[in-house]
Every structure is written in C-alpha cells, then in structure tokens.
Length: 251
Image 1 (tube, helix red, strand yellow):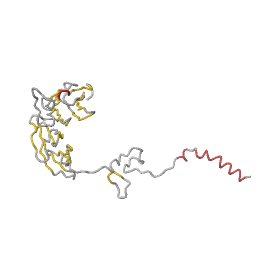
Image 2 (cartoon, helix red, strand yellow; image 1 turned 180 degrees about the vertical axis):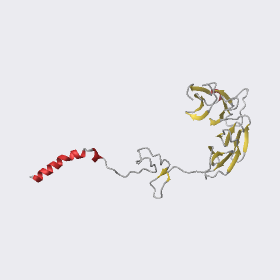
Image 3 (cartoon, one colour; image 1 turned 120 degrees about the vertical axis):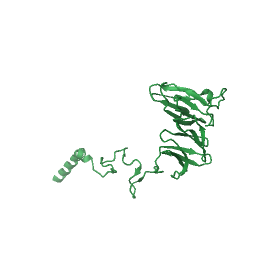
Image 4 (cartoon, one colour; image 1 turned 60 degrees about the vertical axis):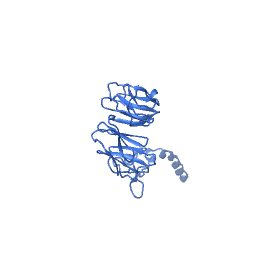
C-alpha cells in the first residue's frame, strides 16, 4: 500500500513542477558575436556582423554578396556601360577622375577636376558627361575627353529620356536645363524648336530657393527638390514637358 501511495503523490505533483517558472527556462550557449556589450544575439538584430560570417572554420569572413572592390578612397563614383560591352566604374579621388573595367584597379586616367566644388556625372549614349561650376561640361568617350559646353556648369545632372538634364548653373539655380535629344553637347534654345531641341524650365515650389536635387526617374518622371519643396518634370518630349509641384513645405 505504501508503494502505491508514493506513486500517486508523484503523479499529482508533476503539473505543479511543470508550471514553475524556474523550470521552464533552460540556459544554453547562445552566439553573441564580438559584441561584448550584449551577451545574446537578439533576434533580427546583428550589429556586429552585418557584413561578415562568423560561423566559418577559417574565422570571420565576408558575408556572401559583400566584396571589397578597392581600397582606393573615392569622393564620387559612377557606372559607365559602353555599347562595345565594356563596363567601367568611374570614381573621383581628390582632383582626378579615373576608371577601371572591374579589376578594382583605377588605372585609366580620364581628367582632372576642381576638388573644391561638387562634380556630377551621367551617361548619355556612349559618352560619360561630367560637370562642375569651375570646369563646365565635358565628356569622355572611353578614349578621349572633349568639351561639351563651357557655360553649362551644373551642380546636379542626370540622363532622362534621351537627354542630359542639369541644374545649379550660376545665376540660373532655379532653372532645369535639358539638352537636345541624344546630344549632350547642344543646349542653345532655337526660335522654332523641334520636339528634339533643348528646353529650359523654371520650376515652382519655393521660388526663392535654388534646386538641390535631380533624380531620374520615379514612375517615369524626373524628380526635382529644393530645401522646402519638391515636385517632378512630367512628359516625354519638348512640347509636353510639364513641371509639377507636389509640396511647398517639404523638401
């Protein structure tokens, strides 16, 4: 009889033991990375291993998809894909624009630029155009550098619908300039313009503010922004380009 009683009591106590909080948690070793400030790796958060893998036998290694392309410092960087199949990466370091073809060594010298001002760049056709308020507009055809315009001195420049589009020209900082279609070297307005001829549009928003951003493109529109306003340039050819203002308080 005593044996049966002991078994009965043990079975009766099992639910109580399982419900105790100190028995529901089992301490196990969890990876904490090299972040010594936190002992556990928080779910969905890995501040110390975003670009590395730490579970490799050889130690810490780059995460798949992360590659150290070059150790040479860059102030600006642009892609340039020529129709002959060559893909360049162009970068500015100090006052020099250089290019490489994917080997990480920037051995192709392009041109010198003023390091004290912002240089902008964009590809149109088989030419890489670059501009700043000191040197004007120039372009590189993968072999030589040519002058595109001495007066188009931009602080923002993009390619949009077959044209170069720029802003920030001194004394015309509120105006968006568009080149002739497929010709980044022709910018003069003509008396009887064709659909492919250049254009100049002064955008709305904060009229006392200068343009600070051009982005091509969002939903097939050229986005422009000022310090406290932004909008877009809608349309596809000279006669139907239309400026739109989306906000006069947000920039």
